[in-house]
Image 1 (cartoon, one colour):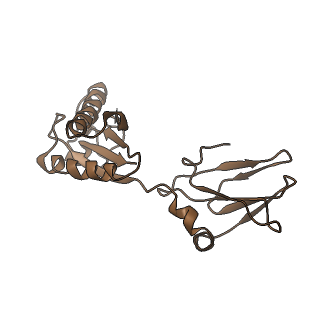
Image 2 (spheres, helix red, strand yellow):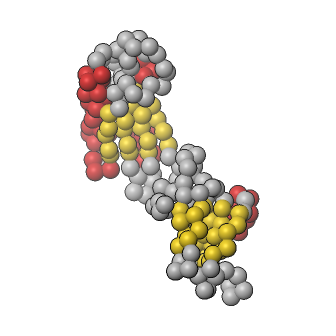
Image 3 (cartoon, helix red, strand yellow):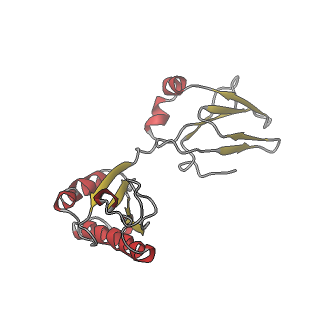
Length: 197
């Protein structure tokens, strides 16, 4: 399976000296622990890498030799390449007044910090995911969760963040922070999760 490099974790490729492999690929873990994989392919063979710190050494003839390394060894051998990797996601949670897309005052006060963190990143983007508690009908909660995400997006744009760099999505009551029975009011589930990428 071929996965984009950033989505699959950072893949290190280094051209090495004449006595070493022509190319070395090392699969690094993703910061948030999600699985990743990449196929190393030549005209002669394919070698899947699907575990952190698996290695594929490719010689000049296209033969691939699999192996493994460690986090310590990668840090020692490739500090400059690791410094080029993406910054880890930053996450924020904002809460809403019951049955509305109006942020609580405590949550509204977090907006400047969110904009500051996203603006500090090269190409920084914000993903806003709206949620509801389990009170109310599913379709109404789907609409409300999207309204919440769009309301937060509008507030961020109003405060000067580039609208093209904000995505707003709603998840209804599908991903509760605190699992509850149906029709149970839970303020912590009335939220928008913010990811700054």
